[in-house]
Amino acid sequence: MFTPPLALASLSGESNADWARAGSEYAGAAFLGGIALDADARAAARELVARDRTEFIPDDPLAFIDRELEALADAPIQPAFNVRSTTPGPIVEAARICDGHDAFLEINAHCRQDELCAVGCGETLLADRERLAGYVEAAAATGVTVGAKVRAEVPGVELPALARELERAGAAFVHVDAMDTESVIADITASTDLFVVANNGVRDDETVREYAEYGADAVSVGRPSDNPVVLERVHDAATRRLGERANVDSSS
Image 1 (cartoon, rainbow, N blue to C red):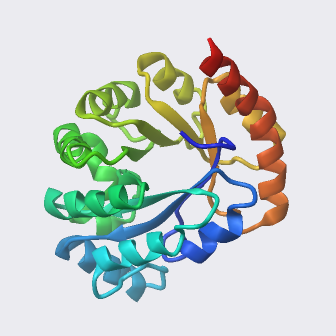
Image 2 (spheres, rainbow, N blue to C red; image 1 turned 180 degrees about the vertical axis):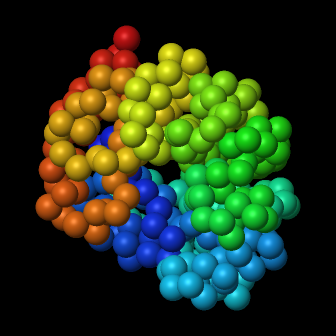
């Protein structure tokens, strides 16, 4: 889906077009956002800002997505946007904008802040598989390349089963915060044909090697995504350990 097989993972309130462009020397993709789309999600984001969390809260979130993607039109990186919503309509509109810029859409089923979970965003979607799959299906109908960011270690949630449902709904990828259960990547890759991006603790050759052995197609860097020393180190490891396998898979 992108090369090199390293992505920049979204950091709320920080991951914009300038951030993506700065990392384009090392990464093949950048997940901008997250961005709250509908009224309830935006209200939750404002509550987060009130307790000193950084968030994107533009007057018009859809126009914001359009502007940020336009700013990356000539950047050598695959753009994607991470979105939050309690309703499907804004996700469809965001999907159309992303598709118009050849960008991916990533539905956020990952954030675990109480304010977001209380309105039905983020991590709560993991336990509401029908609603999450409906979001994916509605987005996929626009033609956009769509996936979801998910989190491991959520009680009662079996990520391989969820991944299969997302695949049936039209997802092309799943972005997995493996937490401290890196082996969940192997469970997902064995269960689906989704493109799997492994996230959490990716810092060096050793961490890339582990995710590669579990079958990840790519890795992503979160918190140090603005650190060129870390990015160069992970870029080299991902290119060596994942890039060569991708070339073999494509030629087989």
